[in-house]
Length: 407
View 1 (cartoon, rainbow, N blue to C red):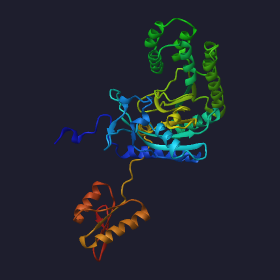
View 2: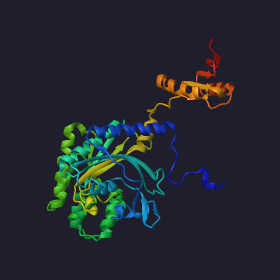
View 3: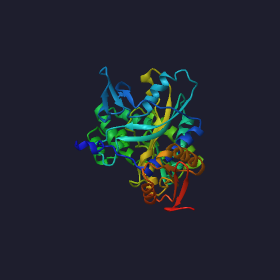
């Protein structure tokens, strides 16, 4: 026997019983919410052409690759937003706007070396395509917040930022692409030491000081006020900050003041985002405080690679960490057990199967006995705590309660 025959590939695992129930329960809550807000479900192929993702937003080394019979390079779907952008620009190009689409499907990314991260992630999310502006941003962020609330993440937090703020600072900084990429990475990881060392190598100035402050620009209204003084004369950064301020204040007005924080150092590894971005954290998650369970934002440029110019915004909820949290809180009942076992003699098999169908419709879960003898069926029922066994022969029906025949 080969060693791998009894194993799952690295980055994958089997799901059992309560975990399957919890995952299905959470996905059902989210899809019901999305449908109640006018979103319609779409599903994209699990296998896509590599070219769909060749813009570099997702590093090639993180994709699972394969080839088709013609030698063309394919990938397992590493992201849902990009294929839905393809779908919108092709099959839905004549549809009435805006498009309100939702999905619930797996994505596949190689996360080797990241302890506890699965290479298969089940996500549910929405894409609002064909409309720009802060009203759409506000709707999507509010829906993201309600999604986390529906998933029983009572202590969830939302952090919002704006790509334009960082891009405006980079423009004034005037660094080469490699330096800008390193800055992006270090700010995203909040690596203060590495960021400071890199900024020390650049000519000092007001913009360098502003970038140095980015990882610490986290909080509420006071962060927005502090940031204003850092971007005087920078039109792009100032415009992004003004838009973010308006969205933040409106989110507070709809009752999310305890859940929403501003993070001007918030960036996203998927570089197709162009405007407001946000992340959700579940403080009660199984892996501790601050686990990311949702992310999203505006991505107005992504459609262009598919020949469309539609603005768009959306988010994805990570179902698996929320599933772990639900299980840790004993929020899922164990799978229901059969209430009745139907055992049919060899000459009454068809009657036994009909009886199971009748009982299932009437009382719930009933199981058909696959054993040859009644003794085996009764022993099995006792081991499974099935109190009632109905035994059928050609001419008789006998009911056993806890192993004793009823008269």
